[in-house]
Length: 275
Ligand code: ADP
Ligand code: MG
Image 1: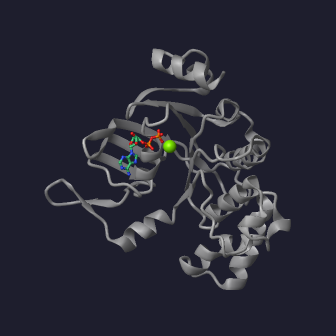
Image 2: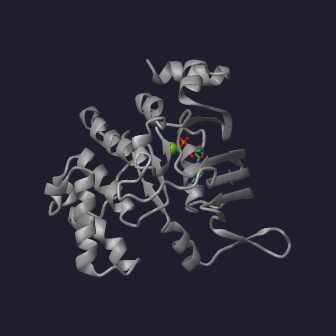
């Protein structure tokens, strides 16, 4: 994103941006197999606090799996993956291996990580505002009135304050995805993960969701975004990671990676998505 613009260097609620150099995510030699399929093959990468990283790559290259590992929705088989400074889903055991954390501890770790899915995954029987307020009430134990007030503000922030009492089926895809983003933000995460958040949307709704994400980035949110929206990557990403066959084959600033890719497979991929 345009981080040279210093007026944008505070979060919306006035808090200072995270200290530079602090790592939100640190993957070190991460491997993952599904059966015999090697889905993540020695993946090492870092995401600094406040950074926006866009992950691209062909279908089946492991992008979703990598995001899901960052939230411990998937286990890793080898390597180390730290999120917000801690091994996600594991603790180191006396033998130097990893032991899975308790469900309670994993749930606690996940509170600091927002996840936005391609298919929104809203609760169909709850209104927009109830979708947003639910986890703060249930998990963060926020008083109902306060949670609803905060949820109302968040719906305003994503531009749909007037839809607070609508059910998901009454909302467009773009509106549902904005509710889903507000719902993730309601837990006050330190890191937001987006898995192709606009690819299930009708084309005319893509822009409104990207604009909400652009605002979030501007407010200093740390974001890992799997997306093939190259305009977003170009305008918002600090770095782009290119995956292929379970590996990170190239990473760089958007201008560099998208315009002068070093790897032939990046070139081939880009020529497909750009045309
Ligand atoms: P991408 O998001 O880049 O399209 P994925 O991470 O979804 O890639 O998938 C990577 C590979 O892992 C694919 O070959 C996919 O079919 C396989 N895969 C993903 N999830 C599972 C699963 N739960 N069980 C078995 N194979 C899976
Ligand atoms: Mg995917």
